[in-house]
Amino acid sequence: MTVQEELRVLIERNHARLLEQLDALTRLLAARDRAAPLDPAPLAAAQGLTHQLRGSAGTIGFASVSAAAADLDESLSRLLSDGRPADADELERCLDLLAALRRIASQTTPETSALYHADLPCMAR
Amino acid sequence: MATSLKRITYVEDEPDIRSLTEFALTKLGGFSLDVCGSGLEAIERAPDFHPDLIVLDVMMPGMDGIETLNRLQAIPHLAGTPVVFMTARAMTHETDRYRACGAAGVIEKPFDPLSLPDRLEAIWQQAHATRQAA
Image (cartoon, rainbow over all chains, first blue to last red; front, top):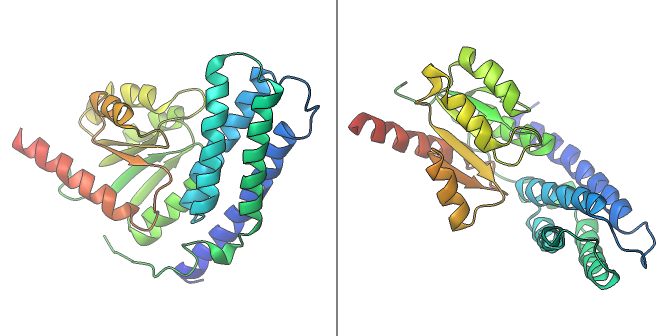
């Protein structure tokens, strides 16, 4: 397997994981009673996952997914710093950001990663 | 201190970033790498690995990057090893804090894995030159 092929396998694997993480995030934030306040514990779990997505999506070459995750990450972090359950309006804003993140992620494939067609520099040390 | 960067201890809890960074540093950069999933692993293994550079994620569950740095620097023969932090939280006040803790450099996440070997080499060269001048 060439170095280029190895990178592509990594991108494919990480892209699949990115979509799985997004599903897990959706379950945390969206699959719940929208009228009920969201407690800090699941909010912290959602923020942690979003923060992870922000970093990993950008590093595997999906800058637009990373930027959308950053918007949600910052919004969830603000809610968390208040230290109280998030109310319905605040959650609705987060759910809008999550919907935007899902929309952007759904348009990606491994081949659309900025790294997929990159020329790889190889250095021997 | 070595005269060229060859051996890196890399600490990251997030598997996706870890696998891509490992690929970049070994396959593209040609470095000898010890990959650790936690600060504790790094503290256990770095003394025997003798790294020229330590790369630490900041936000890790349990022991974070700053505590890991403090504990690594308390190990006598690792005290002078340059440390680079990787973080999504890289506002000016945050990077200033990391440098005040002893970091030789800070790399903001997300980063371009393809240019990472050159960036680490540049940070290491600068730290090496500073140390030689002291």
